[in-house]
Length: 73
Image (cartoon, rainbow, N blue to C red; front, side):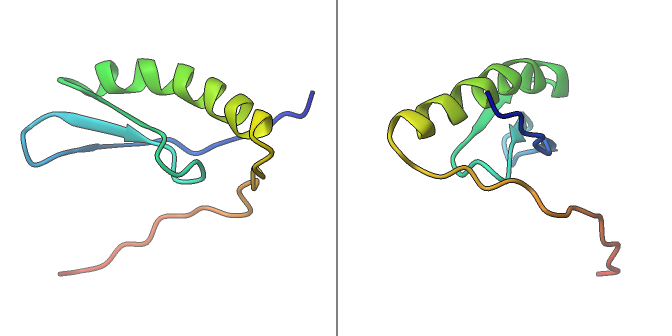
């Protein structure tokens, strides 16, 4: 079994809820009324997403690099 590490981002949405997403796994996201409510189910989604991709013969690309960039707007 191969192990992967994925970045999780939690951010507010326009309706005042929170979205947790995994940029490396396109379409893998969850929502909640608080950051914790969004973060808890994303962990399960991330565990299931690679299994599904493997079953369908789709590749899983490991993250190579992530960072933060500060921009003044």
